Length: 201
Image (cartoon, rainbow, N blue to C red; front, side, top):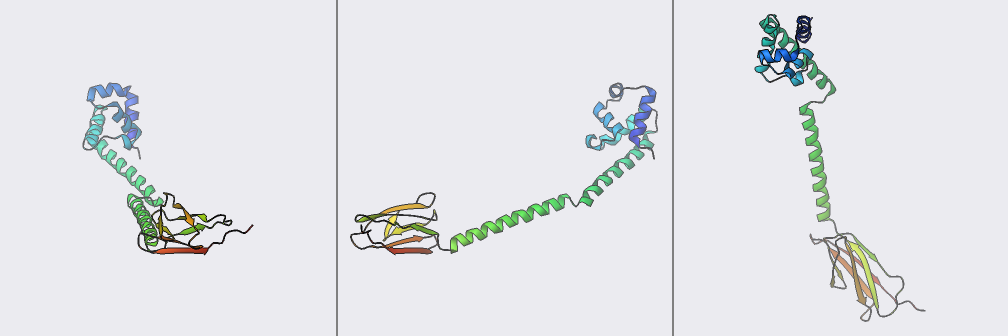
């Protein structure tokens, strides 16, 4: 079965025409004439200009324009069907791609909501670096918690840095029991406490 693309190119070459020459006479851009001869559907013009151009090109070459147009449409449809069949056989279709994208987005959204739920319902992290050696009548209490938590050391409010770290100097004159409390925005609390004794030399 002779394809229209091959037929157009063969007849043109036999008659000694150049694409630029034909383009000037029938007012069809060279790029479209070249695409028709190569069967490059990606460069075809939109309809109905595409079909009209093929018919005019065939008529100019002395061929039966209507018959060539019928064959052209057959070849064009067949090529598109083959292309779609390849895509379908690979399982990659616009519908499949959209479906996968939606599943991924929903999964990320669910994970985000779950993490937010845990962050809201669970008590905050609290790590206190208790000093091992105590000299004098005061001690520096360092620790780390959630950045959005509120920290109190022996009921005194402590500033929490952007990375969750905090520090507080505590006097031991009124007792050696240190209570560190971290409270989340939802009201959940985590408490660490320890009795500190000065180091005896």
